[in-house]
Image (cartoon, rainbow, N blue to C red; front, side, top):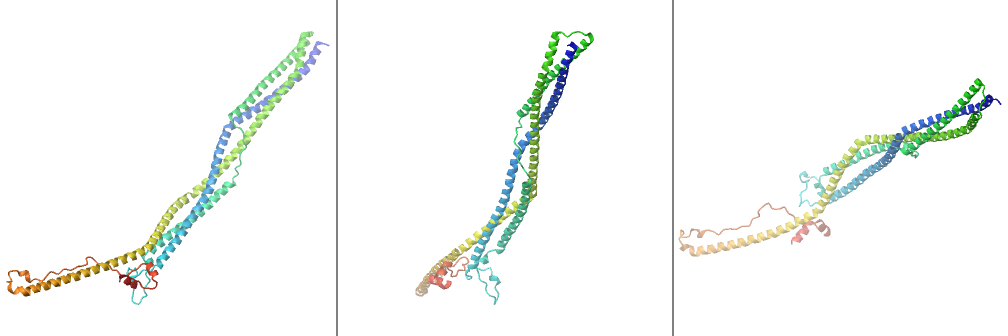
Length: 443
């Protein structure tokens, strides 16, 4: 067989192998370029994604707490208004009871002044004098009106706030806040993807060298053919063996290149899958971030809308508390007033008894002084009758003077005391009148 024919046979599979190698290199470069693009996108997404993951975790917890606080605030508001209403109801009952006690406690008008004394007219029916006549009903009414007004306004604010709060909670509930899929977004993972790209780069360089070697082998074959065609010489055995060996190695090299391309494609697919994961996870976290923003917006809207009413609510609560305290103070004072009335009666009765004792003592002293005075008058008259005619008048002019008189007088205005007894004593003695009982005590 002619050398030219032999070389021609070797060139055909070599050219085919070189063509296949170039196609493999082209595909490898395309795959490598895809890996690089995906890696660049991952590097670009990583800091954004890391921020969203961290921020969403914090903000999600904040939103949950805010939602919980909003629900608790609504309950606390309802509880607060309800508690104030219960306190007001209890206070109203207590006030009604103590006023009823004062109305039912009659005052003995002879002993104590009635505020209606000046209102009496001839022929007019005398109004019953009770302890109730001595309290300021206008003050009670004013405090009760203040309590009622505060409660009505608090209920109105509470209802309005409840509507705003429910609207905010409805908006929060309408936001779908699904948890994003967990994925590793550490820089180590990004570096690992970079290492995959680097490995693919190294493999592409290797198969590119293999392809270039095959192109060089084809160039040698074409050069040999040109020489044989030009000179008509014979191919040496050594050159033939070299060309044959290189040609026979081409299928194995192509197979290795196919394996290398598969490994590059696998790494490219892995990088692309990772990029898709990053993209999906970024989209999920972005949606979650936007959902959190809507929740925050709804809560901020409630806070802004309820800010003024909350300030008003606080002022009304303080005003209501003061009114309740003032009213409780009146209730306590009225109870003490009611219980002090018996002590007043007992004190007046004690003073009357003491006054009676003092009057008796004074009358006794007056009688004794008068008796002593009359005795002295008689003694002086007897002396003058017996010895006066014999004594010159200028010797002792005062001997004819009457004796001095001594008197006991009450200093200060006397108290207007009459017979009074305690409410308990009056009850224990049945229908006996108070004056009769006190006269009996005096006796």
